[in-house]
Length: 97
Image (tube, rainbow, N blue to C red):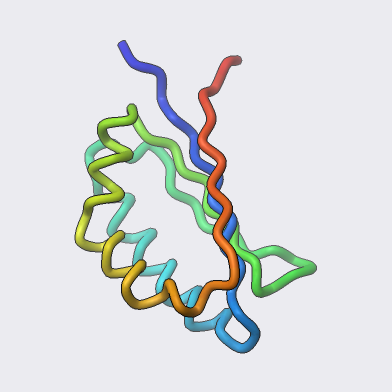
């Protein structure tokens, strides 16, 4: 049995674009939670830096994470919001305890 994968994605919106990025992320959350391999998909907005969003995701395995990255809704977010982002940091982890 494969180990679930945890992905922490930190996305920083460009000045003046945080609300548009949040709207795009909210659509992504709803669709991603419907995916068969999605165990967790939670969106957070930083209290001190409101242009920074943190997505905490957990996937059944690497295959389901790859399916997510190829999904229509993930591709749509990239095509509509990529230019609104200053930075994206992805931390992929395996839970050990």
